[in-house]
Length: 392
Image (cartoon, rainbow, N blue to C red; front, side, top):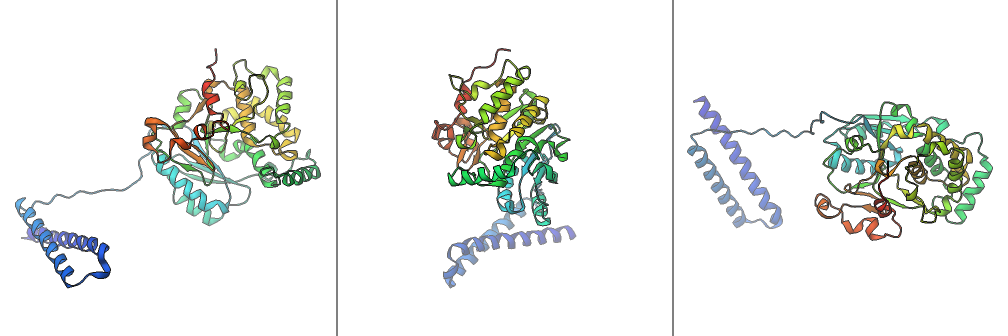
């Protein structure tokens, strides 16, 4: 008797619930005009559902089958790379960053739970940390940038730097008058990988607030890089605005002439030069990059960065971290060590990288929006793709 009473109780609850669902569903369509006839019709349909469920339960001799559905994030895979996302951001970026991280988690990291390192030249607020920690699956670390990494070195003439900003602002050069932007470019070029929070990792994936991820990423890009001996990965490559880097190429050539022993015979210099050997301004857009921290920490790359830093172009001009990283990659790596993540849908305003053909079925972006299709004259990606593999 007790068992029958329990089953009847369960049945009545289910009937009431289903009836309520039916009523609410129909009310959604015509809530404002429900009258007596509508109420009668809904009552009749509820009775039909009740009778059907009662009959079904009786036919199965009161045997109840229950299913428990658990909604939880996927367990982290057994094999992972020693890697982290690195995000240079500020408290005011919280809204844009949350929108980006929701996409990154949904498209990829909820399956892998890689950690995040957030860096800021000012302390993160409690609100920022709480809201970020509450929405990501991986461990979060929040780091303060050392003042010496976000300030003028003693060998920089700050008066000259201020005059350069004023001149570039008047000429309407992009970010030409922005002092903080210059510190950011210098930091991303030569310091983020030296922050103590990054010491434990071998791989990084750079993420910026406001970017979008347009496709499901159903594999681990970190492990792909590691297993295939890649050291640098990108999604978008374009040509730099020459007004921001008027002496960067000559400064780079000066370094190469002084350190010929550091430049391997098999390199990627054809990516950054035209058929006449002149600088073509091509660079990997570094707001997305997946790379080896060991490469950035190498003697060769550090010597190159120090050479540039002493020249002062981060402040006297407006050298960006994208051309700096790209020239370093082109000098010291070969094509086999660099990878175009063609299958990762990625947007940083105003440019898209969107997969083509069959790969686009797991995306919401349109392949026609990809920079190499929409504006091939500005893109350098197909130039990279067409370069021959090195003879090693």
